[in-house]
Image (cartoon, rainbow, N blue to C red):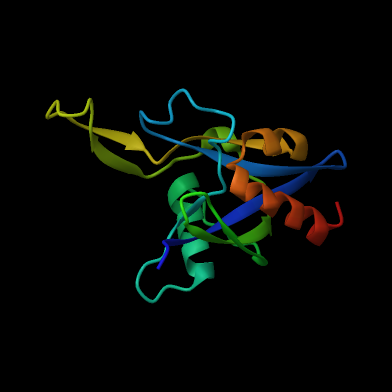
Length: 153
């Protein structure tokens, strides 16, 4: 069975323009990647967790902010590696420059014996839909289309 994740596509309107919040993965593998590397905040299901609970937990862990806005289902997408992501939209606003992400440990450089800590998310940013399409994981671009349909543009 493929891995399953749930996440939130946060959005806001600024000057009549729809903007979405995307996160960039932390750690050495993603350091120099940009186009196609950004994602919605998301994470894998724990035992017995609902999709909404996972989405809210991951939003809080990756951004350091508890999301209290209602979640609007956007359905599922399947990423290239086979992972299924169940997504929700939420209208909210936050300071993307003030995020505080949880961390993970990794032996880096490989086979060095040195364990280093890296943020799960090294940055977040608000993008208009054109810029978001250029940066988001290609499989997740369908979520942008669904958001536009759901929100009326």
